[in-house]
Length: 475
Image 1 (cartoon, rainbow, N blue to C red):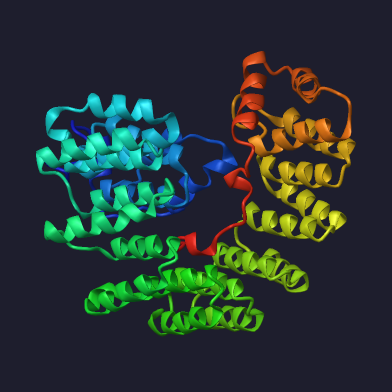
Image 2 (tube, rainbow, N blue to C red):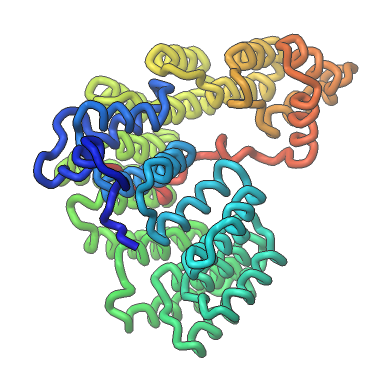
């Protein structure tokens, strides 16, 4: 298979696509146009078709980079649409493209669709890459039986890799079975499979979950015998473990080691430093790292997001307000996530007017409804026993819904039901049904919302605090 070929067939379109090396395209960066789709509400195919029709070249490598970046920022639907456009234009896909496509199908259409995609692949495409991608899907969905059966099949075919074991370890960690992780590590060693840095991190976290801090330190010593295993991420992982058990002295020792290894433009390392120093409660170090970051690398929206989240964690509202205003005055592109951190922080300190002002500003600058913001206000007012205000925000959000783009999270619906149960003699299900029905939502949609709340009333992940350790490096 010739993966360097772009689009089969002759004519001017082929020539336009194949001359990127000789005449690089002028004008807006392709990725930036694609990443703006959330604001413009255009389509991937329109952007790509227009780019070609304007005589600008697109190489497959550039499309692959766009897919990678969009996945990094959880823009899964747009990433999938790029691959589908590539298929439509007869661009040869690599085995890795198929694996990525399977993962994106799982994230956008569900696991059943991913299984159907895998089953429909031609035999040569059912290889260690696509098998591995499906295993990853099973593990992320905590489908233990399917994951183990699939792993056994991969083992029969000779497709098991270190990554396959890492997936199973992650499954056991997320399933509350960290005691099974060391056994998998031993199996890897017996098979002479290399232990990746990620393997060591999961192994450490498994020991930490079992309260075996001596085990964590033994693994650290083993890592040090493998020179290429110790990077700044290792110290970030160790610091996070010590922060969790509130051993802030050891945590800060690890952070000093992290900082020694962080290169000037490794913004993600600095983002971790910010979040972890905030975890130790050290506001002075947070500001020192922030100033250090600004002196060695251009700060991005993601950098400000990490700093704002750290200041929120430390309850430094004055510092947070100053940082947010500094970002607003200098930002090239408005990122509503930063406003969301401020709204969350202000509501946490009963600064409702300040939160409302930030919300209004973000609403003006965003071209799409800010449902998560509305949910934060709903939860705040229900906690304060102000039902009318909570209902106003619910109705405002419902009035902006188009199609299936949003439904109240289980946490929000659960909070309404709890309020009605504890504070009134009204039937909460009936009251919510009236509100939702008044906005012309059908019965199945309403039933799904309410049943989801009853099944999982815990905190909805989208409303949890941002974790700076998870921030990816921005372009």
